[in-house]
Image 1 (cartoon, rainbow, N blue to C red):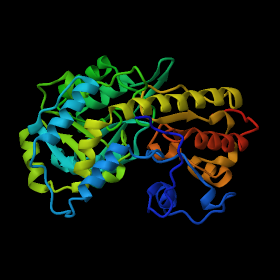
Image 2: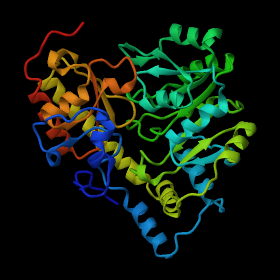
Image 3: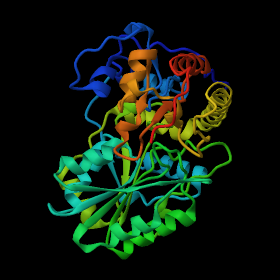
Length: 407
């Protein structure tokens, strides 16, 4: 089946976070501000929520389930779900998780919030590598745990851990690190961690009795030809690596509210199940089974289209804003772009606010990514190319005159 990723899909009047919730999410607590464009004229390149239609086999599976006429209490009683997920993992990255290790969550963010109090005490700390997906920090703060940062370093080969800093913080007894939130692939930089990097990160953690919670929600979204490595696959006998996976990013099912959390440690897994039941939406169940069993061709075509969007962005910046610092990432559909050279003093730190106000483009500035993101913006490239082109034109219009690089 041929899919049309150039199709514009209206999300008006659907209570979409992307279209209807941006002000609350991006600018909560801020006073009203004037924008040059009306709300209906904004270009959405912000939250990691595709602008593409959900794959037709998934939509048809939901329709078929609706035809059953009753949407009653639902749990997974049939092994088909786990077998379908297992075969998907084997096809995509050559590894299969044990069915008995899998618990269910409404999403990965709720899972992080649930796992922190299960794995840590009040005086323990959580370690994240920055720039970082914001909810990692919030998951620690939600349970009143200290959150420590280890800044990634920018090198000629891309972003990489600061091994000296990371090793020191993981091993320093008075810091009390008990959890590493590992973003694999990394959001927002788009790094797909190599097996040797994962091996080194996890060995440091295991040597210091640190739990590794690997958020692998972007695992299917590498550039064509690049293969994702599940962190747990490198340490199949370890009980201290928890893997979080979901169909939500891959198949635009964020509203599906169903994620697989793989917990090899039976004590932790049982503690989870004592606190959280596993009733799920029957529509979510139907959607996931169809996504993982009928949409391989959709993912292939999606990757090709998103690869094209990244090349378009790369070429556009080179022609129009050549002093930006950007490399096509190995994974995700998110572009992490250093705009520092072009930012006027009036932009301030909140680049989300600046570009919304001045260009009518909704994007996420570095301030939203905890630390180590000054001067950067994150763009969602899982959108029709015409939308991306329009957003880039507006962004470049407000950055016509280069200014000295900020110190």
